[in-house]
Every structure is written in structure tokens, then in C-alpha cells.
Image (cartoon, rainbow, N blue to C red; front, side, top):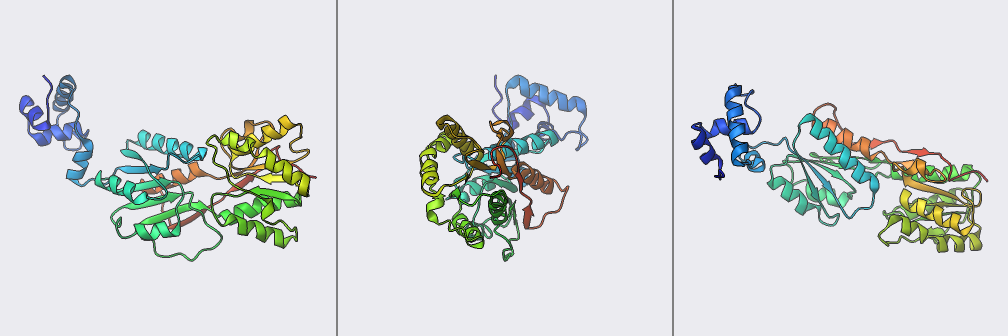
Length: 340
């Protein structure tokens, strides 16, 4: 007969509920409970099919050692999923409890409230945030520690007191300009670029154009698409790229993610053009497959895994972390972009 609750289990074993609870939580040695007693409790619990509600226990005991991961599962950034996997692997290896939950970038508050209700004390958000979002989180979640990875910095920003909120990310303005300056130094003057998800990229693109007197206006900006499959989105860019090549003689294109860049390269090669002979293509993210595309993809390495590792190291007390942390992003030069 199945045991329904811990009280009934303790009664069957003729032990106190506290002793049974400690044994089931894996802390028998810490409370100096005999190993024989621990094994008797665990063995009988398995036999009866009893599974304790660890989340309820953490709420009752006020434990805050559980780490929550938040990820927008509609997000197409492959590196976010790689970062989540890495985070889960690290916590599993060190025996730290964790919980994974979806969130919407339009409503992160609801997801944070759910984790808070489960006794989660710290949350690592793998995804983007805005300054407006952060201000709404300070007061209602003052008893939680929230760490955002891939936060978009744009040069030096005036830092406000975030208290329990920590931001890890790259300087995106520096990253964007680094890509464009590399292409310029390689002889490219007519450069097209896909609009990134953030609204600040067009102004950075125009700043670069004005610096070098290139005359790159909005006509050189490829509008974002939402087909669903990133490779197909890239392939669908072919018509726009060919139009700009004919009209302006563009020799290079910057694409906002590696999968779309790979899709565009395939479409260009299928059309009969050479990459980078006729046109150079640069991606963004440096996903695991980037070196294996043909040609190997030149792309910006956004170190999401390192950001997640840094957040976990902070949570486990191995490093100190400022509220504002900018990490380096490196342009990885491979075969898809060349000199002219």
C-alpha cells in the first residue's frame, strides 16, 4: 500500500517526522543520524513509492539555495540554449538545486513571482533586458538576487544603484563598430547590414558611415524577417542582397545571427556567386557550428557560456561581481569575409 505523506511514513517506521524528513533530504550525516536509520528510511520510502515535496520543504524551512534559470523559449539564439545546458551541468555536478522556467520578454515579472513562490532565492536570466525592466524589478524582488546575462551595454553608461540586480554583457556598440571597422580596413566601402533586434544599431551604423563619409543610408539596412527557421530566413535574404549589389555594388553584408548568415551564404553560392570572392558575409554569436560552415564563418563571439559560468561562480561564492560587468567580445576571423 502506498504511503500518502511523511506523517504516515514516520508512523510506519516508528520514527519522528523530523528524522524522516532529514533522511529524505540527504542531510542525515549533517544531523548525526545513524547511517542504518537513513538507509532504513530511504529503502522503505522507495518501496512505498513515496516522493517528498522538496519545494514545499524549502518554503517551510526558508531555504534560499535553489537557483532559478529563466529563458525565453521563443528565443532563436542558439547560444542561449547552450548556456542553459552548461549552467544545468555545473549545478548538477555540485549538487545545487535548480529550477528552469520560461519567461516572456514582455512580462518577466510573472515568471519571477512563480520562482519566488517556489522558494528560489537567486535567478539567472539568460536573455535580454532593458533599463525600464530593471527599475520595475528592484522593489518587488528586493529579497531575491537577479543576474542578467547578455545585457546590452552601449559604451559607458551612467550606472544607477541596482542593489540586488546584476548585469553581465558585452559592449554592443563596440562590437558592432568592430565588425564594420574590420570590413572597412579590408577594403569594403559599400556595406549592407541586417537590422539587429535592438533599436540602437541603425544609429551606430550611420555613425560609422558618417565617420568614413560612405553615404550608407537606410537603404543599406536589411529589415528583419520572422520566417521561423533561421537558415531559411538567411536564404530569403538573397533577393534583397542581390538588389543592393546591383543598385549600390555592395561587397559585404553583416547578419545578426550565425544561422541566418549560413543560410544567406548557401543561397549566394547556389546562385553562382563566390563567398567571399564576390561578397563577404559576417555573422554574430559564434555558435558551435560556425567553424564548420563552408566557408567557415567570420563572426563575433558573444561569450554567453562564460557569462553563465560567471553568474554561477558568483552565486556559489567563488568570485565577487559588480552590479555592472562588461565582458569582451572577439571578432573571429575565418573564411567568409575577405579583402578586396
